[in-house]
Amino acid sequence: MKLKLLDLFSGIGGFSLGLESTGQFETIAFVEKDEFCQKVLKKNFNNIPIESEVRNVKGDRYAADIITGGFPCQHQQRGITKTWGINQHGNQAETSQFREQY
Image 1: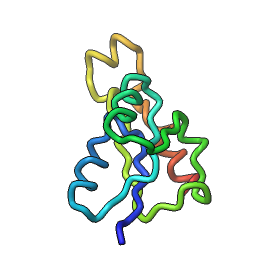
Image 2: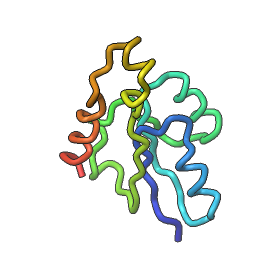
Image 3: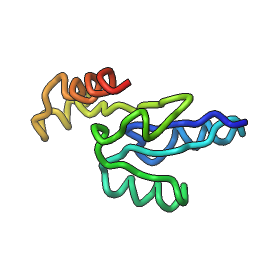
């Protein structure tokens, strides 16, 4: 029996690809708001639901054995921080949301 995987802040699905390649995991849903990444996920992971907002993901809807999270790290890149004006602690909202829901 495969473990059910919920992939948060999925990007293009690297965590799921690696874990599924072991034969021990099955991805049940992705959470990714970037439209380009969603297109890649749809192409490479056919028929797996993609949620665009982590606040819409509830534990009773997606019963998972393991949760991965590729939390955004853009705030650690100086060029992007200056260009986009991202707060130094730009991913705190995502982290606190994760703690509240699980």
